[in-house]
Length: 445
Image (cartoon, rainbow, N blue to C red):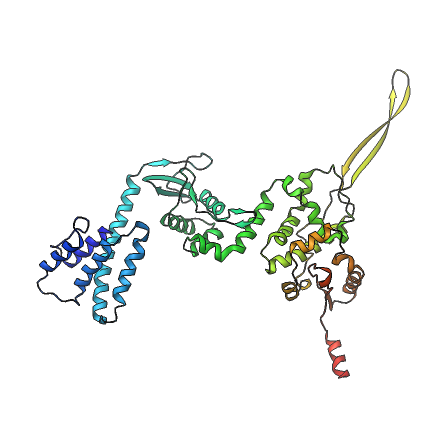
């Protein structure tokens, strides 16, 4: 702050300088008027002294210096009594001073980077780093330099921005893991541009944080839905099998009409079972914890029901324990007799359909209906737990008719609708009228 005031005064008059840190504001103006021979209130130089007075003697903390600097500048340029020539001359002088100020700031920063000692030269896996490589970023903090791999910084930033409690986003300011001090805004800008121009991977979350000017409140307001969806995806991907296994029965109840045929044995290894159903858990949690009213949440339920139906139809005996007995004749050498030895082995039927096989079509999903008839999680799953009839049970005969019609006539498509309470249960069928039906309607009319 005082440096900018000194540069502005030297820009006005190289032989006249007042240190705003050593004298009060009254003495400041006394010295100015005593050294100005001809006083003109509308000279740019006078307003530059006035600008230094506002900037030097106002109570400004470091974080608000930039805001106040441009606030006082705007206050002068918006003066309705100032002419255009005055504003142009004033802005020209201020720009010259600021260009010099930026040059000194960059010089100071270069000096700090050159003279500061490297405090940590290993990555998070304790591998030594070379500061000259493109994927190594040098962070200057608290007078010391820390070396980071770009991939490590991306993980640090993503883990901080994806911080959540029960899938409710609570992003945190990224911190230096070696001293637990948050990165300031200038450091975040340096990290972002280094990754953007020197690395192939440009993380989406970091880019969204950059667009929010590294403001956590704006970032959360603009990207809450994306944060929650990413958190759900990471939870399903990284959670241990024991955590997901507790929700398996609840997830299968989404399409109870078909999944009730599954009899999964208790001895099936939990790890293998959960790994098979992880993609299904992703759709399940997107509907259970997704932001209500979004098309992605509604579509996840419809897609999950179709996927579960295809899963059961592919192998209705999934999860069964299969016993296999083998009879072997064992001959005794001493007694010259033969005995029958029965060996029993067992295995589990874990053959399943490929989840990523295209079994769900967008024509099967009615966006308009789902937007206005989307049930809450409690309306669907609590009704199942209380033994109430679901849409699948009520519309069983109708769905069979529709599936048969699909095989015979391509002009009829079923719409997979989300489950709703009994009062709202609807089985929707959308008929796409072909050319023959249109001609028939014209002839009738």
